[in-house]
Image (tube, rainbow, N blue to C red):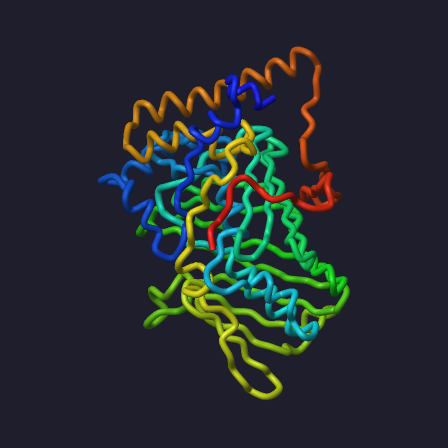
Length: 397
């Protein structure tokens, strides 16, 4: 399997030396600015010159010059384990009643929305790639695995040391080219459990829209639902563009929504939600008219710390930061030829292992999850273990 990608006598020590960790995407987004080349828009458009509108770009291979120095698996994980000064996930479990907890889950859901960057994309994870990180401040342990390659499906399992929360996510991005834009929908079941309260929250995900014309931009868009069957409460959140002067322009980071009792789409709102996911989002009690801050982006994702390796021997050869370590190192040093060659080696090795399995009639089985597709076509996964152990990579306090 992927362990064959690193043929060394001392796997732990070599893995640590090869692991490359980069700052998470936060409000500043400085990492991409350092890598941004001249004439970026023209270079991006040239990539899709021969791509037909409507094409599925799930396996489109980008040149290394357009890659962020991290895997998509890391990007998914960072939305969970990289948090600012406020523990929003812990706030969900500490809610005094069902309404307060649902509102907290909405705030935490918004916090997983990180600023996208035009012209750059993470690596497509290879089959069997894993990413295992702990947060020292919240006690959250997070494990991800790329459980399918065609189609690409990523699984996430997270538990905290206090036994209050459990996350099980299954994500499959489906990007399509539309001529002047690319829109990526994320399919899959995403569940947050508040164990002490016996509550399960089904959480959606917005679409990522990359526009080339009339001006380049990248933004989150679409409707996201948060549903708790146990309490009968539900939230609708809409990522949209606010209206500018005379209907032109506006802000693409607008968030609007409501919290209501499930059962009828026409049900009256209990709370109304309004704001901008990169600034503040307010919540209004419809009954009393009281308005308060539900989410503050600067507190939640404004000052995110970079994870670091703390246990050399605990690193797996399938760890994302190891698999792509040489590629990321070359990108950071702007050694584009070395980055191109290193990326090709990772992808060629994955193809070779797939061919060997196919020739032997072997079926690849995920190491940490089971996987299936429901009647609606969405992917579902189940962790093979009840909890996630502490990780060799840690986000400092």
